[in-house]
Image 1 (cartoon, protein in one colour):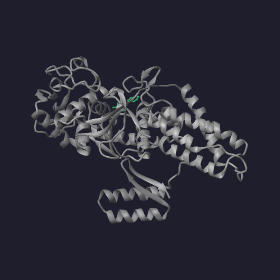
Image 2 (cartoon, rainbow, N blue to C red):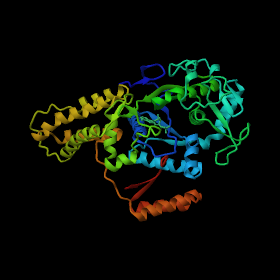
Image 3 (cartoon, rainbow, N blue to C red):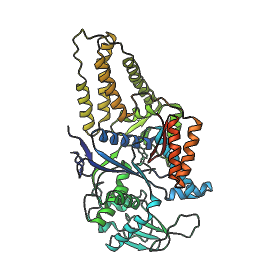
Image 4 (cartoon, helix red, strand yellow):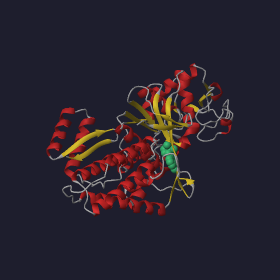
Length: 465
Ligand code: AMP
């Protein structure tokens, strides 16, 4: 079966075909780390986690890259308010973001890349844009001249002229050539709390849009398969990315498939930090399980909006309980030696599930297949008319879905003993000091005690063997 994906760039569903075989390079805009993440962010990151996990199940070799915006006016201003350095604040909320992602089972990212660790690449892109005449310097920074890029607006369907009235995170400077021009490099204002890096134009810091293309060019080159984010990023952020990369490389398209998630709203309004109508991920998890949030999010198609309410959460909880009851029942099923004529075919459900997911990752349709399976198998269980083989097939299928959706099987929380945690910390210190042999010895010691250390993009994980 072939996978179809809705592409924001072409505004239609297209058959998914990576540029080279099964290799898929995918980039999703990460958070600006100045506060705790809310369930609106969770909606977007859960959606992409499921998309990546499904692609991997289909045999694609996905490298999932996500940036961390750790330099931005919002970070600088918040740090100033709180009397801490911008770096302290950014590192703290990056850690908290990764903790939240882990609690939600969002663990598919291959690499996180901080903006501030790619300053060299950013400067190189700005230099090339200046050289090619797509950028100009004024008193407070270097700007991109959108009138020079004739494709400006191709993703969002806006023209350069319409961009004149654009306000969202487009930097305001009276000296700009066009109102929609955005800042590539901001000159240091001389305030000592502002982050700054040396550049050919003096001290300064990157604008928001340039970090993503600098990072993707480093890891993927000028062209790659998938770029994602929520729909508020289509304009100007993703439009700006195209303008930067395609002007530099003269290769197009920069991205073959653009995917955008719908918003999580509350009373019909986008959940956002600035509107103050948000529920943080941890507030949600104090009351409900991570499985429930994944279920609630995946009940809607990733491109559709989701309106959050406690009532809608309760509804999801009831539905999830039906799955829980079924899983328990099938795990404890008593089967007979087959002396009945079974018409049950697991392939029917497997095919329907794949068909739904192949249709632009239609998770609500795929979830309907789970309930159809429950409806068909429940009477078989009640009548004790199910074979051992059928139970095995159903459990395998449920496990397969769980590895993508993450809400089918209850996750038993394994408590890691303090002794193991301490050893893992000791190993981390040794690794930082590059004492690899000693670090490996501790890893072995941990293994003998029945636990395994895994070093992942999200940090070190400890697992019970
Ligand atoms: P930010 O930290 O605000 O840059 O957001 C990080 C990611 O979460 C971006 O892809 C945003 O578009 C996305 N996002 C923010 N708010 C929401 C929301 N209410 N619903 C869905 N996605 C969101």
